[in-house]
Length: 376
Image 1 (cartoon, helix red, strand yellow):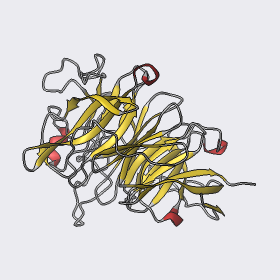
Image 2 (cartoon, one colour):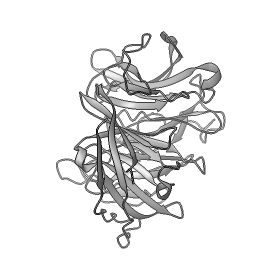
Image 3 (cartoon, rainbow, N blue to C red):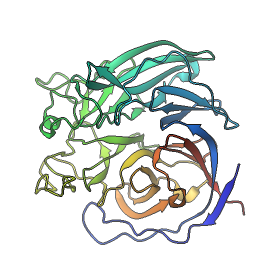
Image 4 (spheres, one colour):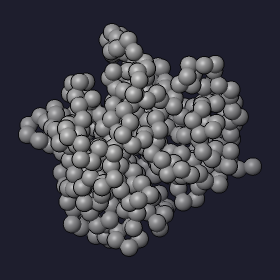
């Protein structure tokens, strides 16, 4: 594999913390080595490591592949259902069952076609075998269908109780529906492995509220991660023109879209004149202009000890790997932009069993890049 070694000479001064106070201090950058771990993967979207060190990777067009530990890529696994590969839709995230070692079950999210021009975000599960997938079945889908193509959200994260978080976008089908608790637009849901609402969800038994809803007021969460120390759910989401966010996503809370936002419409007109409202949460951090967030990792490995607890976010539009350092768990003290030389849209991020960082590039000839400490 060809390694690119260099000292990152400068850091990017952090954008303002959510409080709008003074710019954060810079944080020393690191000497890193970047190599191509695997290549020839068509628009990879989600990935997760298997216990034996192999990597499961989704392709947006509807294929699930295995990347072996030598970097070779398998043929598409048999047994997956059809997906709606339209616009931003397709086969999206993939995650292992918490008891995968015993049951070999995996879960995946995808755009499900409804009629000629509509679709829903859906979740399926299957047993992973040496021959492919067995018993593939849909376990959950959005209550409402909408025109195909936009804002599926779709990151999957298991919590410490074995329940599955599914992040959902607003589907670009009418901003007003996001604040309607009888819809799945702009929500995070929390379900069991059969697709049923978790019994301790915050809105169980409330009239007019879907029982699987965990949080609301989101635009399009494409990165989510369970904090390795606290077990809390974190996510990043796309703003419109400006206003990409990082949020600590808590039970029952409303994150404001589209009533409050730090962004504007793509044509430059305002969405709202409000950035804060009582009862609506402020982001931990926001970007203006947008970086187009996707994928998320809170680092906990040994390979980069100074990065433990740092938040990594993929940037699609600005084509880099974004690293944010926090103080006291919520105050941004620095931002750094890595992999700019790769000139690649970063779609997904995983920490490997070796403590190294692996990222997937969103391209028809996509790659998995491996980030290691540079040889001394």
